[in-house]
Image (tube, rainbow, N blue to C red; front, side):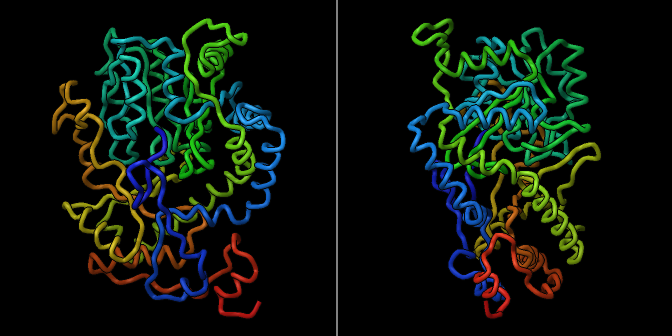
Length: 434
């Protein structure tokens, strides 16, 4: 699963992101009602500005813009982070999925088992090779593929299982791994939204035979454009992936196989190398924001109306998205109410893949995968980025409480200085002199 647009994005998927803190944090925080962006990448960039610009300058001065030393550094760092033996950088998360399938020898007519409730890239990589996506329903609580429904979809044509770690929480990889071992099938992790997430004490990236990551700007670890990477413990698979990402060329101008052109830009790797050491801290802030939402919704009695997201007992959730369920067909009306209040939201995903027009020929229809269809009707993503202010979270919950006629959350006692603001901005925020 690669980059999905944020609220208000143009059709090409480039995120349109508002930033109330940029103009005047103090003024914004002082309002009773204030706009809240779904994501504000400027707040993350500001404290890293000098380090990122210096890293970009080093690439510009070197002139090595494609797969330069920054890329090798990034591959080594991510492999160490995930606990994998090998990491192979590529141009996007979508390409990572395609490369994984190619390296495993997927051919036309092969069947790949995957969830329907996911971003389009998961299935499009399958169909680009002439293979057939076999859609499986999801679990109610985690939004991830339901292992209990996988075995029934395995046929002699099944070539691989492709679970997605959706919204920052791993699929049940213990159960999926057991099915794969019993059927002697490889497992491809779609970990585009889940770098740093874990299952059973291990991290995404080492839970299957090969894992695919995206560094689209809106991800927990996002670059300044597209970027992707694969991890694996198999030296043979790693060598094949490296060969395939560069036109199947080794040595130069000698082509052993037909590959694709999917190389990571050095500029992207340089930015990601600066950001990677901050990833765990950002995940902790996302967890803090998730916990805060749970408390605020309970304070307003909204936990009895909405279904709130939660981590399964054996999972480490990194909260790429905070997705609530809105019952009784009121999701769209709530979103319209929040939009009028300038609260950023997004619907991931309004049409499950098995009901997309391009997959009509596969024979699925309404009611085929009821939990996927229910999620498409009920889910709404709220702002949860690490730099979210406490008062902004209370504004989000307050507008939702207003919609349902519930009491508003108590106002914050005092606005604390966010770590990503400079001293002068913090002084404005608290109404004090610098």
